[in-house]
Length: 160
Image (cartoon, rainbow, N blue to C red):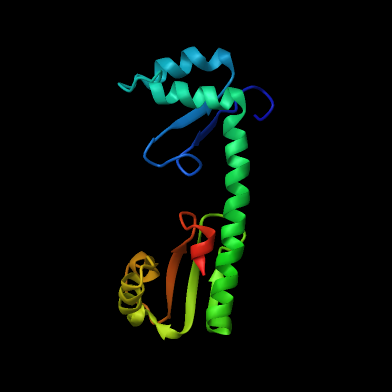
């Protein structure tokens, strides 16, 4: 039904502004306002200060400018981070999820899943927060150790 005015875009600004704001948005044709507002009956006031501020920065173009800046900065962070991993570990690791996003999954070729918690604890002692992927499995498996590494909140100069 695309092209017939029945598409509603729904999104959030949690990753682009702040997850603590818990702000979302919907884009739809004005004629859908009444049916949508009747269906929602939510106790949440959608005309909150935060929503008004978000609407203002969208209208002025400040949000789009912010998103462009953050994309450039996160692309730089990602490149520096991947380069640092390659320099430190070379062929000892396989990295998945490098094309976009704010984190990657790194598998270590000479560690097993049973090494993950110990390795993560050692990393935390050095100030590096990583998350073992074993926590994502329902049952233990015999596989390489893997970790989720996030880099979005790290200053570029500290990534190495």
